[in-house]
Length: 77
Image (cartoon, rainbow, N blue to C red):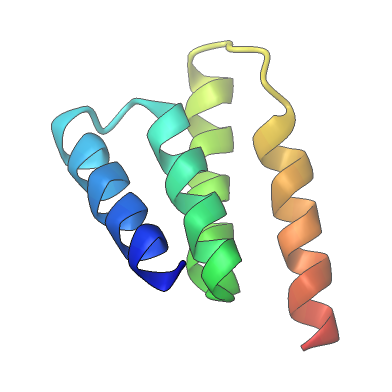
């Protein structure tokens, strides 16, 4: 499982480098980070995804809800 998450993070990182305004890549990488327990990085990526969604008037509240979930996980650690 850990190798898959590392690979997902690498792939999403390539996507963010190639298309820095692609919110879904930050959202996906945030999910992989959260699954690893790296909540600080997950929150940073979810926050970036949400900012991009707002900037481009994309209606996708998923990133905000997931960020709230990650914050909840962090509080319990």
